[in-house]
Amino acid sequence: MSLRRILTLAVVALLLGCSRTAVGTAQNGRINVVTTISTFNSFVEAVGGSRVSVTSLVPIGGSPETYQPTPQNVATLAQAQLLIENGAGLETWLDRTIHNAGSSTLRVVTCTDGLPIIKGNPHLWMDPQFAKRYVLKIRDALTNIDPIHANEYRRNARKYNEQLDRLTQEIASKIGVLPRERRVMIVFHNAWQYYNDRFGITTLGSIEPSPGQEPNPQSLAQLVDLAKAHHVRAIFGEPEYSPKLAQQLAHSAGISIVSNLYDDSLGTDWHIRDYIAMLRYDTEVIVAAMQ
Image (cartoon, rainbow, N blue to C red; front, side, top):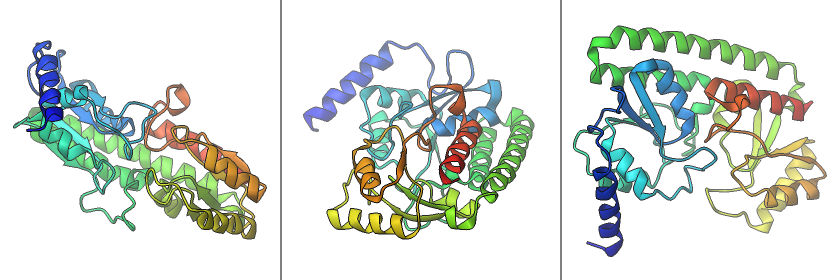
């Protein structure tokens, strides 16, 4: 056993020893649910209501694709009853974290199982119609854990998915007012494929070819050419990523930068307090930049 693993297990044991919470149940008697990213908290809270206690492993503002788990994450999983992960390669660090937690009772829901994944892109939740499938998986998991309240979970899931249907129509209407030739995006990393496919936006390219990997000069030059050829109005990025490369590309192409979109993480103010608010906010930002 490596020294690092021994130290991790020692810290976890200390953290667990300091807590009197029963495994799988929060101190308030709710089902103890852990998500990998804060974006998924909205789905769990919508379905579980007051019967769940939810926390995310990746903190708000963090990226799940480059995240380094902590001993506290291991301790959190060791006490959880249900884990909601995306899958599809988003959380490459998660299997080892689950293994280190050593829980024999943890149930894991992989939300992308059975969904159509495009070229390995894991960001399916950015299409609210795929998000509905996440909600149904969470509904089923909570029902299995707590069958006494199954009807309540089913009712909550149905109501929330109706909201997601209305959100889909709302976004489609807002994007639909844009001339088709303006519905093009160059993004920092391609979290927008499924959103764009749903709402008729073309993803021309992304600056970061894979998480944490910088593009070569030839790739940046190609993106500049694409931006000019298609009259792209802005480069779209997120707050958790360095704006340096986006600034370089925007300067070369003579266009602006939008650096305040959200996808892997919620925000800290009311504009992006939950999933529905996040997509409404993102849509307003995108439409304003494309006008």
